[in-house]
Image 1: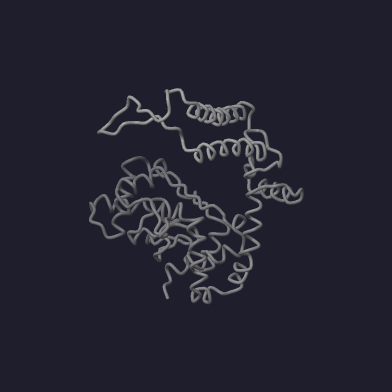
Image 2: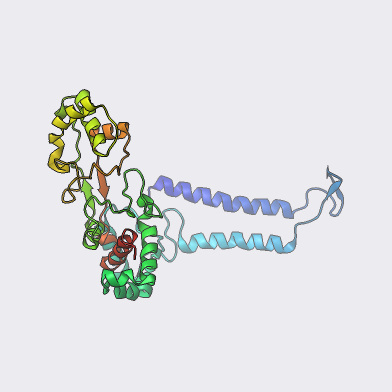
Length: 317
């Protein structure tokens, strides 16, 4: 944290605390006249009285102010780390390797770090449970209701931001509840995807290679026809002749190739939308999709449990 932001946080926090102390002092000291007398404020027949604040309330407020100042001294404020040198988390690290190294150093030096402490506590409490599930096959996990509930919670914590809490995905993020898989829907493939991630950069811009907007239009018309849509037959025939440039990944019949992560164009399931405009955008400008690797973040045991849960979504018992 820079000196400017440290000073900004310290000044702002102390102004608020001492400002509250000043206001408390002002309301304790009676500046409105004799106590118990009516004030010149009336609304709907109710007259305000010049009564002191309840003692319990002023004591509670004063204790809160003192406690707040003590908290700053003990745990730190801004760039000041406090008496105990407490930290909420590792800061200014930009890679997983750096974070893990910092965590290891924290443990080695017996520093107080809430994030690391919570990681260690979670491993101690739940590590055995994950290890027990990781020793089971996917068939066993599919029959284990507790394991699937654990996998669901892990999914919601780590995967729902992209795929949705119901795993039905959204534009650019696959639906995990159907049987349409870009890289394969077996348990092994799902686990591989979660472990190492996917980097889909092979769908590049084809506008220049096809020869311009008119050729893109023809190819899009043919692609739309593959999923049974009514299209202009002449444009579709022209597009079929140019589709050869796409067949290297999607196949001559347009049914895709899971080894390459190339989608099936005949099933009317579209990752980025199946409208004419969306398909045109895909062909003309390309698509880039990245599924980050979760293996190092979650660990082998948790990945095993999440994979079983995801597998169960499209393989109901």
